[in-house]
Image (tube, rainbow, N blue to C red):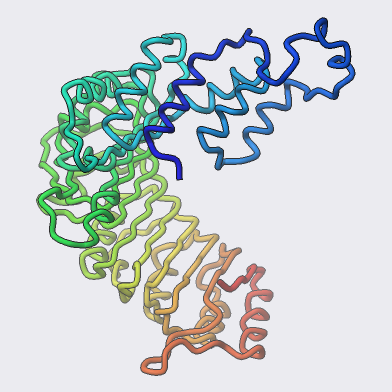
Length: 404
């Protein structure tokens, strides 16, 4: 695996290449090598297509491709600098040195993924912190990810951002710290204190907010945030202070997509139930139990109808006949329903009866596991005839069935 500093070094080397420089592969021009003109050449318009065909280019690979000919340098630069991923504080300084020496590269930077770890034997220098400040004050950023050590009291680094008017996607990720600690107690707890001073920074542009493995503290506000977040993802988020509906205070009507995953069923059920009361225009909901199977208690009988909801995906959520009835009562316009995982105890006959009832008249896609959980024996795979009965019930209602 390429070391983060080596990645920054590769970016720096490409920064120094000239788009008009001669090729590094043998002949410098056709006039010096008559046979050069007879050799097949790649059409320059194909270069971006070649680069886009693979999402797993290593920085060193891109550096080598930039040496093929001057035609490769521009597309390589745009790919390297679009959203650089820097994983050490030292890499911050190396990257900043590269772009300050080549200021024409700054407009290429559309996003940042910063996940620094403190390397053994290396202290974070004043220069490294100054480089971090330089990065967080870049203008024109559209996406920002703060992970690693920056996820600890992450509000400190959000406040360092002086120009947030263009940021449409923000991700705070504490996963790196938890992986390094191996689940052990650590003084470096990934956390975020969210208040109106942060919310108002993103009220104009933010469309996607993702919080991962964080302890979240939410302050009450008397003023609506006026945010227009369309997509919210909460992965293993613990609310230590405040209420989850304060996250987008009186701005929930703009939310279209909600994705929640948690291994603490009771807490997550309460969180989902609270959010569904706010999100009247929600179009898709994904809820994952992460091995800690919940019992479908996130839907309540007095919940306002989610008339805009079209897609519902549940994983490791133990749905029963009563839960399905609540889904049908609350989500009348549902077109896609996916209920997966090995914790589901609903038998195939329960699905057949539900489909025959016509409870979800708009349903067009149904995805279920190929069996159900039968404690204490475990997961029971349905026989072929049972699957055929379920498929026939789907066909009769015009529903496309798949098992996963």
